[in-house]
Length: 338
Image (tube, rainbow, N blue to C red; front, side, top):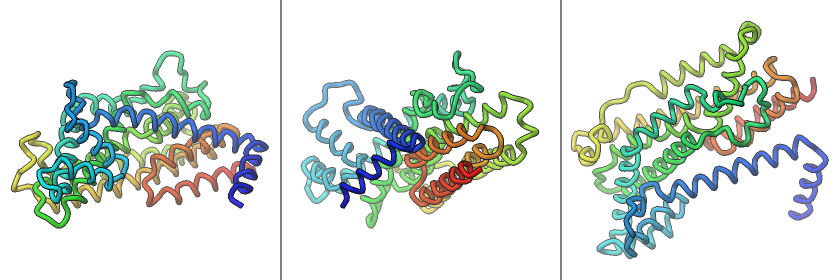
């Protein structure tokens, strides 16, 4: 039954050019992101990143951290049990390693982080010679527009988020001196991951550049421009608003700050994660309006929606992924029926 269903889906995709494009786009996006993530995460917080020849213990620790990033806590704890002073200390040992290395990687990447965010804000990928934004079709956005300096920082944020969450989970139920720092890091990585993901760094930047590149368009697209204004306001107020000083602001010396308010930074991290999800919902509105509101011809509007669907499957938080995808698909249906 499963095989026959798969075959029917395959032949439907062969008959429908738009479905074929969607399948191909998603394969490209996932393969490209997976390759970048595996190559970049191998150096995030791992002991080999120092450039020294790793000892067997270092190699085992790096392997354990790699399993944490992949969500294989069972395998990570198995390795940690051989590295900790006592097998019963494996959880605490692994939690400390996750916390320390995630914080160190974040603190040591300030220049790269600032550059990546600056490139996204400026829409630099569309300022490269030969990339006239008015001539770029939406279906071309699948590959080549997510700058490496941006995608590397996105992977750094994703890895930091995973390690911080693992540290908090492993340290739960016991006095955990690094909890405030882990929550603060989780808050910052949630924002950084959003800012540098493909949906924001490529799709939103592309739509913005298309509007700005033709002065005659803006008066014709009041609804789309209103969504852009709402997006910028929400980003500034909910995601980039000042945060209280905490352990990360003290550098490496801030890990054990006794005055750090764990509850304060937990609330901050949870607020930032909710706000990141809301920012993606606003982007869904933006893409839907851009596809149907007159910025693109129908064919390009459909291609924009298909590219967005592939990116959203990777970038959207789980709690809003399906609702956002439903909106994109419903918009495509409306566009086809016009």
